[in-house]
Length: 322
Image (cartoon, rainbow, N blue to C red; front, side):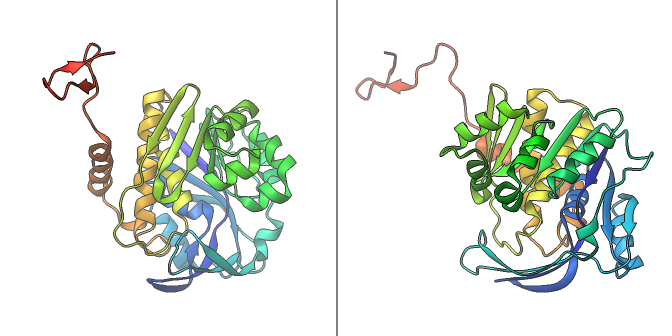
């Protein structure tokens, strides 16, 4: 199967406790594509400016990402600059945002991209996300959407209208509580599912992720990373792992969704180990599989057999029931 992502390609300038990078490749569509490309064929639709060089394009092509939908517009490429708190990498300050050509981005899906069976609507204006979905023919088997607090706070109605038409929603814990005005993740996820999406993935940073798939609730821990270099793009890399794995299997069963969630956690953990796509762009399949097995080992324990008792009589050592 194949996968289409519509989002942003940008130049990021980032400063963390580990160092800094200026004008490195970034953007939601780029991070997503770099991650998903390990598992499936990925096509990218985005806009860049005249300053996006041939070298930059070759960086994408090196991952065998189809960039025929990467539009070049007159002007400069979207730029973002941020500084992360040295004591708390979950906190960052946006120093500068220059939308440039991205301000007038109106995605046009070419004939070679309208029939992809899986679609990821990356973090852009929900009105544009809806317009993209209307251009797909036929409607993809799986449509997934990511968003951010700006669209939640200032464009809630448009966002909800778009969410009603997707299958999978990615939000972090703070976002989904804000969007639903619910105080718990479980209540918030149920509220979102009643809007339309049957699968909700709630990202919880260093505490992992919760997936809600109808009656199935699945929790995956974050893989322990010794040195977090740069969290930028971790969420998009997470989504790329999830959607890329599903695309590679063409299996949307509950068990496959669980595996996809673990893969997502794996790819997100690699993303934070380098600036831009320095780490994600140079992985081996063996590294990905080893970390997948690592998460499995972290969470495995012997379940109770049907007739087995959990409680033990401390005097006799025998297992006891009620």
